[in-house]
Length: 143
Image 1 (tube, rainbow, N blue to C red):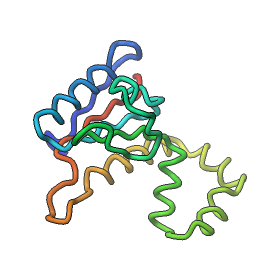
Image 2: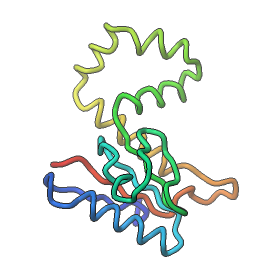
Image 3: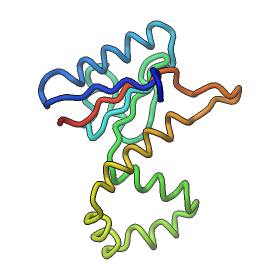
Image 4: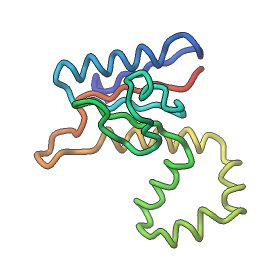
């Protein structure tokens, strides 16, 4: 992904979200289109930016600064709807209690789906063919 992706990682409580948010805001202030993606962040970045909570809906909270709080359940739903394209098919398969139980048992599935969502946003293009985001800042989960 090159220098377009900046990952902020580390132990919980050390200021990762604050540093990631400050970097994302500085990049947006410098004229870049920025996506700040949190992994199960609880909308902390939106609060730091004094914006309304965004949840799993990617939203522009400041000029050129977009925020999304990604979580595995919504990412699986989004991916399934992109793949199957029908809400009824998604509901029949993924809302089934046996399938939901099985999916919880698949090792690292939740993390892989979250990385897939991040990759999706990295691959998004504008109508002119340029990347939708110049910079992607990932506020990774605590290690």
